[in-house]
Amino acid sequence: MDITATTRKTNVQGTVCYFPALRVKDSDYKNTFVSRGDPLVTRKDALKYARIWRLGSMSAGFITDF
Image: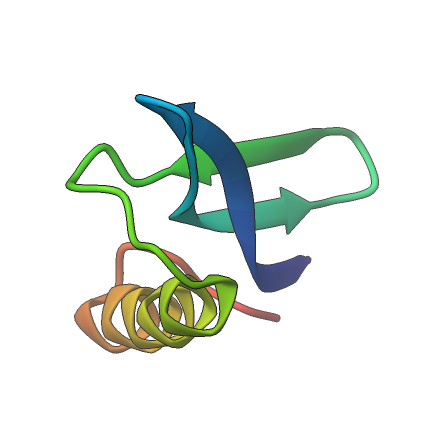
């Protein structure tokens, strides 16, 4: 299982913004989970929060990385 921190691009009132996201790939399926909080202005910030989300989810046991 491969879990990758990534971002999703969106347009809010003419401004390009980004949502943190997690991409989960397995041999059987591929799924992307997008955070539905407030969008962030820079991709760098969204990627930082996606990495934090990934580590927090793994440490809490919600996502297991084999």
